[in-house]
Structure formats: structure tokens, C-alpha cells
Amino acid sequence: MSAPVRARMAVSLLHVIMSMPIGGWAARVPEIRRQVGADDALWGLANTVPSLGNLVGVCAVVLLMGRVPSRLLGVAGAALVLLTVPLLAASGSFAAIVLGLSTWALVSFVMAVPMGALALDVQRRYGRPLMGGFDACFSAGTLAGGLTGTLAAALDVRPWAQFALTSALLGLCLAVTARWLPHEAGGRAGAPRGRFTRRALPLVTMAFLSGYVSESAVLWNAVYVSDTMGAGPVAGGVAYTVATTAGTVALLAVDRVTARLGIVRMVRSCALFAAGGFGLCLLLGTPVAAVAGFVLLAVGMAGVNPALYTMAGHQEGLSPSEGVSMVEFGQLPGASIVAPALIGALSGLAGLRLALTSVVVAVLLLGVLATRLRPVGGATW
Image (cartoon, rainbow, N blue to C red; front, side):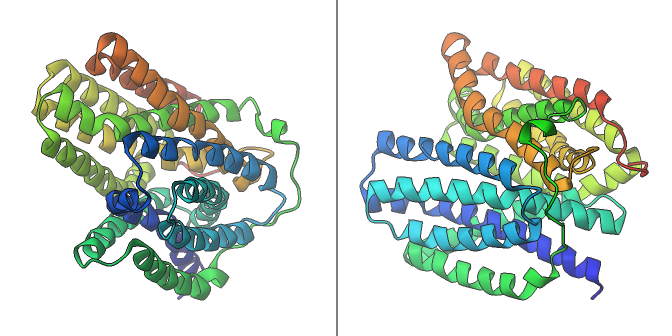
């Protein structure tokens, strides 16, 4: 295999390493809750506290990126993820679960930014869009983790044993492919505030809006379909699964669409498609329209994150890793803080259906800000 192909395989593996434990954990949550004796309130607390880990993680990568090579940080972060999750699954107390989830959140952020920078390096070597494919690897890893967790539960395999086995296998693959990862030199790194250039601020704002839209869809999809539309919990679960699958399939086409339309036209077209489709389905207000709306939203938003990472990696005066760290910095408050709080508050005042119109507004703003983007480097895309 040529060096670019090996690099692409190695970076794809990093995306699977990050995402597969997420899917596996989601499948084993009921059993782990019983394991530590947590009720709904305590479990909600356990998943709220780790947002502090997210904050610490994003601050750490903003400081480290540009000073430490992305290859070293990516491998170290992946190894820590593979080590943390089995220990977390073996926890026998609520306090240990909270500590483990917080640690997982932190090391995931330490891994995420260099992983994005390495993906951009591979894309540069190929000379064509590849970020949609890497995001598809992430989604496929989540799905594989969920299927593995479901099968392990059916076979009565303990959660810690499941994660220990998958971590061992993924760790072996990482050991083989780590040397294939591309090099991005550390060294020069200005003060973090110097990264918020006039040209980078629209990207940070778009990242905030993207995080808000994506997390809102995750949090409220099933609730809106099952409760607000009265379709029942089974329909809610199906709606979430269908939308997730549709978004994953759409990612497979993102790179080709970007190469054909160009990055600016692609983002504007995707934003218009997502906002129009989701808004129309909210207006119709039926269970079928609700499911279709979240599917259209997932398909339309599939092209946004790959575009943001690509543009972030080509900011004048910033290394790719520093640019990616700005995207992560922007997404965190939109996803972890504003999405659950704002829609929850609006839902309490006017109902969930009206509250979700804020998602339509956010997607339209994404499309408007996309007019500030410029083609990367000398490439037409």
C-alpha cells in the first residue's frame, strides 16, 4: 500500500476507536445503572457532571495543539480511551461512574482535535474531499459498538469483559497502524486568543450552531415523535435509529457532492435543504412528518461538519490542529450547554413543537454564514 492509503486507514481507525465505545456504552447503560444502583435522577447527574470533563478537555487541547505533534496526541488519546472505558464499565459505585465518565469526556477531547488535524493532512495528500468519509467511519463505529453491546448483553457477557475485549482488539490494530499516521509538526503556537482571527470567527460561530442543531436532534428526536406527536416509545426509538442511519448513509456521498459543487455551495445547499425539510415537517405536525423531518435534518446536516473541519484546517496563520481546536471550542457550548437548556426552556413555555423551530433558525443562520467561506487553498472545492 502507498503511504497515503496507509495514512487514510490509520486515521479511519482512530475514528472507529473513538466511536465504537460510545455505541457499546449506550447498549449497556441499563445494566450498568443497575450495577451501581442509580435511579433516573442520579443517572441524569452522572451524565451532567462529565460536561466539566468536556470543558477541561477543550481547554487542554486549545493549549496543546500547535505545541505537541498531532500524531503523538492522537495515539495517546486513543490509548487512554481504550484504557478508560473497560475500567469505567467495571465500576461498582456511583462515584466511580461519575469519575470515569468525566475522565472519558476529557481524554475524548484530547483525542478529537489531533484526529481531525490528521484527517485534514490525509485529505491534503489526496487532493480531494475525504472528511465525509472519515465522519462515516465514526458513525459506522458507533453502530458497530451498539450491535456488539446488544449481542454481548444477549449472551450475558459482563460489560467490563465486552469493553476489555474490544479495547484489546482495537489496541492491537492501533499498535500496528500508529506508525502509518501522518506527521504534523508541533513547534510554533501563538497565544490561544491569537487564533480567534477575523476570518476564523464565522467558523467558530458556525461550529456553535452545528453543535446546537446536532445535539438538539439527538436529545429531542425520540421525545418529539413519541410524546409530542403521540406515536409511542417504539416509534420514538425507530425515528432516532432511522435518522441516524440516514445521516450515516448521506456522509458517504458528502465528499463527491463537495467535489462537484464546491464547499461553499455545498454548505448553503445542505443548510437550505435541512431547514426547509425540517421546517415543513414541523408545520405539518403529524407522526410521519416528524420522523421524515428528522431524517431530512440528518441528511442535510451531514455535509456541514466535514466542511467546517476542512475550512478550519486552512486558516491563514494557523496550523490545521489549531484551526480544528477552534471548531471544537465553538461546538462545545452549543451542544453541551445551550441545546438542552434553551429547547427545554422554550418547550416549557410554548411546547416542544414550537421550541424546535429554533433548530430551523440555527440551520438558516448556518447557511447565511456559509457565504463568508472561501474555497480552501488553490482548490476549487
